[in-house]
Amino acid sequence: MMNASLKKAYFRVLKSHVLDQKKTSSEAISDLGRKLIAANVSVDDVWKLHESALGQLSRERPETALSDTFERINVPLKEVLAVYGLYSGVAFEPKEREILRRWSYLFEHADWGVAICDLSGRRVDVVNPAYAAMHGYSVNDLLSRPLEYVYPPESRPALENHMRKAVEEGHHVFESIHIRGNGEQFPVMVDLTTVRDRDGAALYLAAFVQDITKRRERETALNRQKEHFLAIFANFPEILYVLDPQIYEVLFVNRAFADLLGENPVGKICYRVFQGKEAPCDFSTNDIILTQRDTPYIWEHHNPVLNKDFLITDQIIRWPDGRDVRFELAVDITKRKQAEEKLKDALIELERSNQELEQFAYVASHDLQEPLRKIRSFTELFAKRYQENVDEKAERFIAYIVDGADRMQGLINDLLAYSRITTHAKPLELVDASTLVDQALDNLSLMIKETGAVITRDPLPMIWCEPSQFVRLFQNLMTNAIKFRGKEMPRVHISGEEQKAGSAKGKESGSEVVFGIRDNGIGIEKEYQERIFGVFQRLHTREEYPGSGIGLAICKKIVERHGGRIWVESEPGKGATFWFTLPATNSGVHGSTVHGSGLKGRELGRIEVRNR
Image 1 (tube, helix red, strand yellow):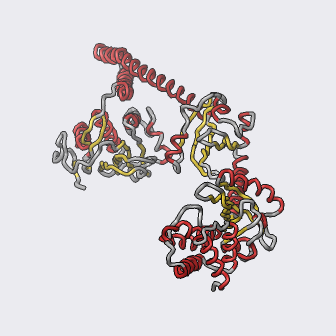
Image 2 (cartoon, rainbow, N blue to C red; image 1 turned 135 degrees about the vertical axis):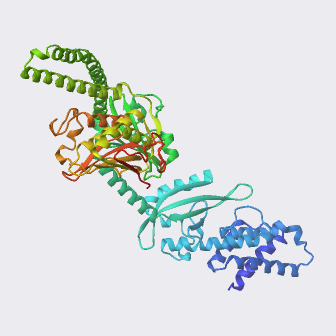
């Protein structure tokens, strides 16, 4: 409750200022405001006091035209509210009362501590509850004390400079140390603001204070993390550094990079010390990583200063001081790049050598044809002309010569076929694999009929290939399946479908078409399952199984030329399945319709097309 003496004091001030036309001093009004605060008079009660004083004044002097002296009526109220920290020199009318009430609420309940003092800082006139609680005092404990009362002795000289700046500049923010009533020190951020009247004259200082203990604890924790982070990477074997992408300043380098540079570049400009340039590099990734933020950017770079190649990973991270900085990890790949160059050169040389070898094989095979034909033809002519003059032993020798010439002719033809896979390659076409199988079956019709082989196949997909080579591929694999048969009638099944990457042997990504040629023949021991794809590799004598030993080598070269792989799965006595793959580009299953030679239904042993 407001006591009577305060009511009378306020009325005297108002009456003197309005009716007696006397200018009451600001010091007197401020003193009245301090007394009201000391008596715990709220801002609401100050308004009521003012309205009550106006009512009393109107009753005593009804002839007074209060509206004509509106400014003088409100001067005492403004001055008192200024002491409360709620008036900054801006004129107001009674209708603004609700706004000031809200200010009062904020003042009383703000998290920031607020202290109002004179310009010298020698006397604090107003503090809010947050300011008092922050320092471990009651509100009354801090009134009329100097602003430096809550500063430890070592911080007080700096406070004078801060107050001078606030008066000169109107506003000044700084960090300092305050001391609580129990002697405990804590960090604060202070916003000192000079409050002025409408003419610009400084009235008092308002100190807005925030306890930043938790912020400092977070900063300390972040600094510990930074130190831990940098300690780990300081000894990292690869190159690591951090720089400010806005000004290109180097903030950190690890020991490996400093040793490589021969100096510690921290604080220097990156493009000067790293690249030997006087302007930012045109290949700088700063714009990229600042745009994509959380996504690392990986690239390769040759450093001319170090004459080394690096695989670099750049990413924006938050530095402990709040800056977005560029973190870079650089792996020295110089040896790898040199090895790649050597490998590239070796591959070029190998390709050249292979081309020369293939050309040589083609030319040599072609040139061998003529002398071989002469050997065979003159041997046969000799046997015919001198048939009556040679004995049985001579006839046997002549037969050996002819047979050797025939086998040599076969080897030459196979070698020519092998070399032509690449030297006479044609563009790939999109064809139905079913028609290719049917053409191969047509070529093998006599063999199928003689052996009584049963050939079945699934509907096969469309594939990209050179048709003539794939007819030979299927023909060789089916010939192999029929030739190496056991005691049972040979059975061969051909399948083909598109599969997801990884479902076929050795494949890691994408999709592919996988073909299988399964038979019930004699099988192949595991130790020979790679060897059989070599040129002129045989597991049996010619008497057991005729042939040159190049058929599977031709198959392997055709498949690899088309970007695929070939392998066999088998056990002795349990048949074999030859698998090969092709990239599935533009491939798709055609259904069970057979296009091509139309072998369905013809009796060549037995050929079946199975719907799937």
